[in-house]
Length: 429
Picture 1 (cartoon, rainbow, N blue to C red):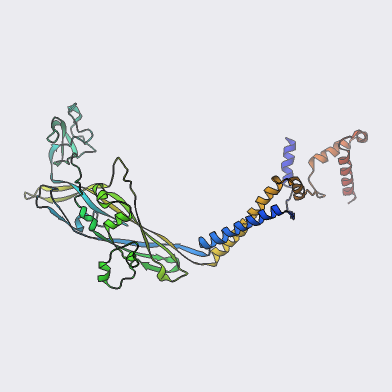
Picture 2: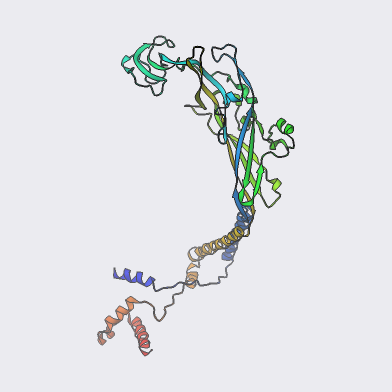
């Protein structure tokens, strides 16, 4: 234990300084220059040129607004045989969202609902009382259903031979056996258009841009449609919904049946060292949900339209709306030449060059055949006059107690005499 403590203490009285050993070896020289060349190539080619390590960067900031256009007509979705006209105020729910919009493509409508007492849909968990009428507990809600139970178990008018709990709710309750229309009720929505207006800024460089490029009058802008590979129409901010679906790799009619989620990405990657007019947006599209989902597939929600009938009773129309959620994502950055990041990258590159020395040292000292020769030349131990030597000093004191012990010294005589000479010099000084 004392030896360990002495060793630890001795560390505080030591100093290491690098020793330069010039090794003349073709093998080691080639490896060293190759590693240095690789590191220099990485720093200059990748870190500075490819990753633009000579530029300062700023992330894009901006706002996105959307405006849809289109009209649809549906038939046989309700008891009204005259059909219904759907405009943008009807099929865009809610009217405005932050960086997103929803378009209804399919519907299940429960018309003319009024507060009253009626049967619960038997497919609601806890509503089927065919085998046990006691499940219908008075004044308790069916949380997954439509209302509060009255305590009665009644015959189902929708599913013959079954019984269901009676509830106080908006009646008639939604029929769970109904399926979404196929083809979709608003399949014509594929022809709808959306105007995406985007204004961005790079505050650090005081650069402002918008995605309306190359159009000088409203009429020309109004009639353009985005085409991804077209020289001019790739900058048109008006998109056809069917085209967006196709660019996402999905069929619009298939997507419209159950709904889904599509992301529209507006990417601004700009090099401010060149003309600011070359700072232009790039659009990309992808579907976020999966068509392979088995449970809870697609995208839908419910909302209601309230009104009063001819007798003044509050009435509503319940919509189970399937549709496509479009999420608009703004991303990008701008770069401009700056001395500071360039110096930082050059300094980092010089520091990384030491890796070549480390790898070569490992090879020279532990791998090559002449490793023992190189190791002997690499490390040199120098002991100063005031070096900390706890073990030798203890040995000297123990041996100096008797002069006759010197005659019996067999192993450590040379060490003893060296120490005697050392301490004699100290006494003289």
